[in-house]
Image 1 (spheres, rainbow, N blue to C red):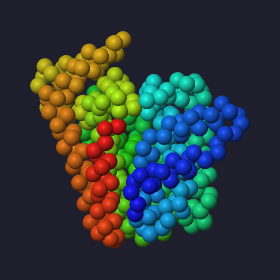
Image 2 (cartoon, helix red, strand yellow; image 1 turned 180 degrees about the horizontal axis):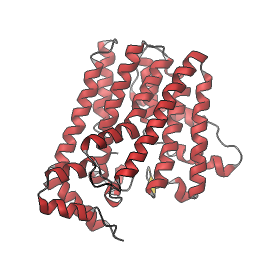
Image 3 (cartoon, helix red, strand yellow; image 1 turned 90 degrees about the vertical axis):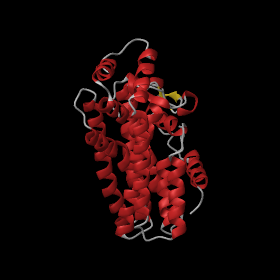
Image 4 (cartoon, rainbow, N blue to C red; image 1 turned 60 degrees about the horizontal axis):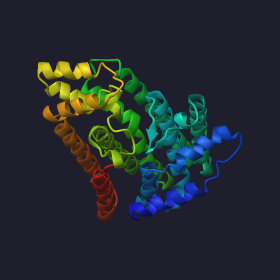
Length: 324
C-alpha cells in the first residue's frame, strides 16, 4: 500500500483529465466546477487504497473510485440546496453560482454518470458494484431525509441521530472501501470487514465534522463555521448539551435553536459556550475517539498482513487529526 498522498495524486491527475465538457454547457459546467473544487477526496482514495490492500493495482479501481466521487459530489450539490449553504470548500455553492434548477439537474446528471463508470467492469464485478451502490445511494437519501425531519422535531434521541449520520455519511465511506475490495475480488469476509472499518471511521468522521462546524478554524474549515447552529440542526453536540444541561440552560439552548436572527454571531457564540460548559464538546470528542477505536478493532479480524493493518490504522489516526 502506498502513502495517502500517492492515491490523492492519482485521483487528482485522473480528474484533471476527465472530460465532462459536453453540451448543453449549463448542465455540465456545474459538474466540472464542483469537481474542480477538489477537497481531500477521501472516498475515492479509500477505494483505491482498499484495492491495493487486497493486492490489486489501484488503477484497476479507478472507475469505481470515480463513481464514488461523482455520487458524493452529487449529494453535496443537493445538500447545499436543501441547506441553502453559501459555501462549499471555501467557494460558492453550485446553486449560488448558477441557480437552484441548474443545481438539481446537474446533480441528477452526476448520479447517472456515476452508474456509467461501473460499466467498465466485467459483468460479475459490475453486478456486485451496482448492487452495493444502489443500496448505499438509497441509504444516503434516507439519512438525508432523517436529517431534514430532525430539524422539525424536539424529541430526537442519540441513537436516532447516530443512525442518521450512519446512513447520510458513513455508509458511503464503507461502500467506497468495499468497492475496492470487490474490484480486487477479495473474499466476502474481508470485503464485509473493510466495509465495517469504513463505516465506523465514517461515523467518527461525521461526528468530527459536527464538532469542527462549531469549533473549527474559519480559515481552514472550508465551510461556514456555525452553519449547523444557524440552521438549528440537532447534532450530537446539541443533543448531549440538552442531556447534561440544567433546566435553565436547557431552556436557553432550546430557545436559541428556535430563532433565526439576521445576525447570527451572538447566537453562535452563546451556543458554543453552552456546548463547552455542559461538557457536550468533551463528550463529542470522546465519541469520535470511540468510533475510531471501533474501526481499528475490525482490522484485527481481517485476513491481511500486520503491515497493511498498521497502514490502515495510521490512515485512520491521521484522518481524525484533521482540522478541515
